[in-house]
Amino acid sequence: MALIVQKYGGTSVGSVERIRNVAKRIARYHREGHQLVVVVSAMSGETNRLLALAKELAPEPNPRELDVVAATGEQVTIGLLAIALEATGHKAKSYTGGQIRVLTDSAFTKARILSIDEDRIRTDLAAGIIVVVAGFQGVDSAGNITTLGRGGSDTSGVALAAALKADECQIYTDVDGVYTTDPRIVPEARRLDTVTFEEMLEMASLGSKVLQIRSVEFAGKYNVKLRVLSSFEDPESTSHGTLITFEEDDTMEQAIISGIAFNRDEAKISLMGVEDRPGIAYSIVGPIAAANVDVDMIVQNIGASGHTDFSFTVNRNEYQQALDVLAAERGKSFKAREIIGDKRICKVSVVGIGMRSHVGIASRMFKALADEGINIQMISTSEIKISVVIDEKYLELAVRVLHRAFELDTPPKAA
Ligand code: ASP
Ligand code: MG
View 1 (cartoon, protein in one colour):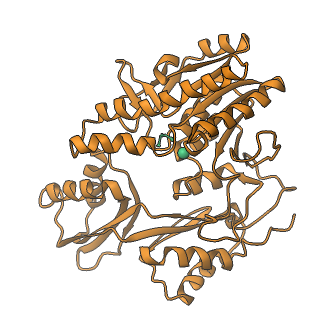
View 2 (cartoon, rainbow, N blue to C red; view 1 turned 45 degrees about the vertical axis):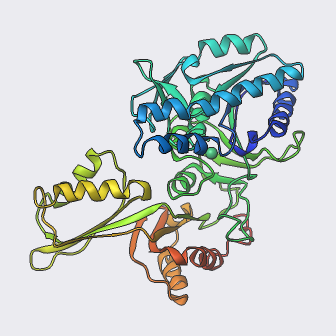
View 3 (tube, rainbow, N blue to C red; view 1 turned 180 degrees about the vertical axis):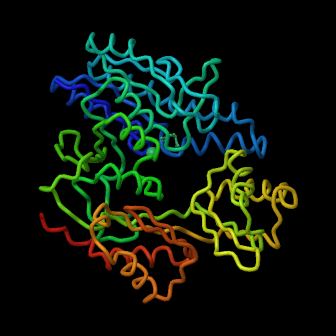
């Protein structure tokens, strides 16, 4: 008997029929003797619909109230799923984030989980009850409803698995695992049987939408065994999806590059002709961070005649805010000849732990892009990834040629 946390995303619970199907799968695991905690998202499209309602009333709604509105989506699904489970003769009980006391900080719309009170869950599980918990939401110490950021139900699932020391956290979604890249762009993309935790972390942060980045960080920190599976397969299916592993196992497939990730949600800001002096980077990025805007890739040129250029990328929906912050600071903490923004960019990355032990990955990547006449605007690297910023219009082409250049359409040979 195992304690399993299952998380179902919005498309998996997108209709009454699908909820019924999810209930069947849960019932199967329950029949096999496992204890189950199930975390669900709002029905697909629901969170967008709710947020759009709020934005009809005010262009920048109060974040506290946005969370009050957005959190209702998940409350609907937990109730419906518990009803579906009871209708098939299973004991089930639904809880909102606040009821189970998923305690978070007070950063509305992107709160972080601080603790989870697992006593009530354990009592229910011991009584044979299937516990259904609303993803994406929590409560701060003052009792305010908070949400964890878009896609946050993954994090709820992993956090619950960590708190309960679950044997496995299964993330059910509309794809049957983690792919070498998005199959909608490259039909030859392959499902990976395993991917290392570090690669997954990179892929999630680089915009591979299978898992929310925070959920992967959480899984790493608390050693949660994470598996990505499809909720669209037959509820009796025993498909294994993709397991996120912690060690590099020699007996497993060894690819140099595991995947091509991309992100269309970024924008680039360049400050031309800033002074080349100690503290300049801080005077630019400091105020941006203080406004709670995440800065991603940063590039600073070599200085010439006391001046330099400084570029960075931010999330596209925080782009205007970043520009406003810079406009307010310009002439105060820094001077710049010109500030140029560009929203029509994207980021494409190759990811793989094999990069640690192989040379020539960057040159292979740059050649593949050069052969297609794709200009690289920014480059950044880590131990296991190389990212480039390019014109948005070349995104699909770039992903396709890189997938081919690294032969990702054919399975790697066992080492
Ligand atoms: N319903 C939330 C969203 O759409 C959370 C989630 O689905 O994970 O972002
Ligand atoms: Mg999701």
